[in-house]
Structures are given as C-alpha cells and as structure tokens.
Length: 178
Image (tube, rainbow, N blue to C red; front, side, top):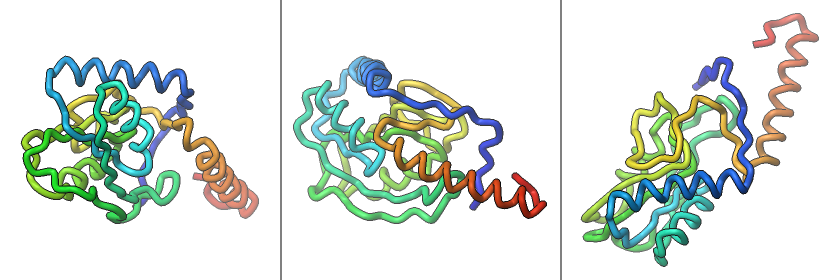
C-alpha cells in the first residue's frame, strides 16, 4: 500500500537529541507514578529507546516483541510477528516502548499479542504522528516529519538512494516523476 507523505520534512535525530527526547518521555512516565515491572521493546525501532527508558526508570526486565511492518520508504507491508516476549505478562505492570507511532498498527498489534493479561498495560514512544490510530499513553513529541533515528542512518541513505534512482529513471523515460 502506498502512503502519501506529501511534503513531509525529513528530520534527522542525533544521539544527543535522542537523549533529550528520552528524558522528556521519562518525565511524563514518572509523573503517572506507576512502577512498571517490565519493558516490552518493539523490535527493531524500540530496542534502543526501550533500553534507555528502562535505564532511566531502573527497570531490569526487558522483553522483546518483534514486528516487521515497513518494507520500504513510503511502502506499507503486511505486519509480520517475528518474536514474542518469552515470559507471561499476567499480573505485571507492562510498558511497551517503540521509537514512533506512525499508523498506530504496530502498537495495536503489540497490545494484542502480549502473552497473558497484564495488570497494567501502557505504551510509550519518542514520537507519534497526529494521524496515528493508536495514541501511545506517553510520548515526547507529536510530529508530521519523517524521522530518521541515529541507528537507521545507513538504512535511510540506502532507501533514499533507491528512491532517487527510480525518480531519475522516470524522468529520463519521460514519465511521471512522482
């Protein structure tokens, strides 16, 4: 499925900026006064933010929920569940962490696919998009920008190069450049 990003600005996040955004996110989480037992980091994008949040909150247990969703820049693929947490979440206070909530589908799947019934289930992201169908309970910022995190810079450059090559080929062929 094609997703129209329109004239979205590309915003590259540095490690220092990520630390500031994580601090902002953690302050919102701590204001809620819930002592979470476990972080469930969504792989791949939520692994680093999940670890940073766990460190800030003093949470030692981190589980991983692997969901592959985006297959390419502006291309949305069918969600594939790659990995489930390896312990039952029944009775635990669980915080799901991801880097961004764009469509909201990843958070929706994550909440549905957790093993067991948590006593508390909340979600947190660094960024959320205003059109997300599932708004995280905690987020650092709402943005319409196309976000490029420090851990995905090489991947983004490769995808951008591929998109540019297709665009240039279409122009040479006299076709539509969009």
